[in-house]
Length: 216
Image (cartoon, rainbow, N blue to C red; front, side):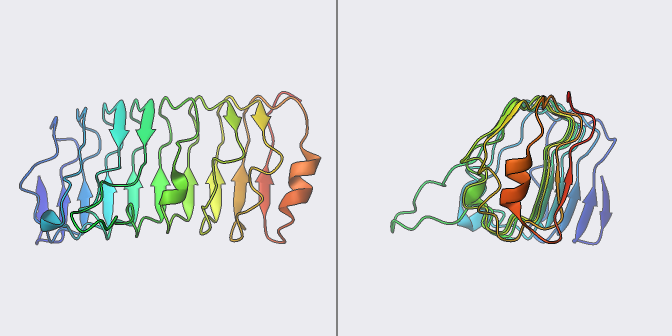
């Protein structure tokens, strides 16, 4: 791996099959892209809290990932999981501590990118990511967008669902997203009927909606 002091580590294209356990707690940026990593597990416990802000795990071999135990990454802002084989992405509340307190899940995470994977549905529990602003799920196998998929995602500004297999979108799927203002990208899906009711219900002045290259 290549180090830039204690703040940045670049282990891309090294052929590694695991994230090194000796990663300095002071590292702010870590790049493990283009390797053979099959699993990634966050250590559960405040004693191992890390300063990481940007984590790149793109283009690896990860097929299943749980973010539920990521209590040790309270400063993480961007998580890049593009180009893996992820079929299941689990988000849930961490186990309560001895005093009954439950820490928020990745409280600083602003960008979650899971493009070019094997998801067949929108990950459940996105509302637990209290700071999430950008969600990138393009080039998966997602078939529908339900009423509760973006529930409690109050900070979400843009959603990229391009190049999936979406045939159905609930009328109110994007309604309670007060900060959504950049883009809802639904290009290259399997939508067979235009969605005027959804577009009218969004009613955001600066919202861009991409709908080209669908079945209609």
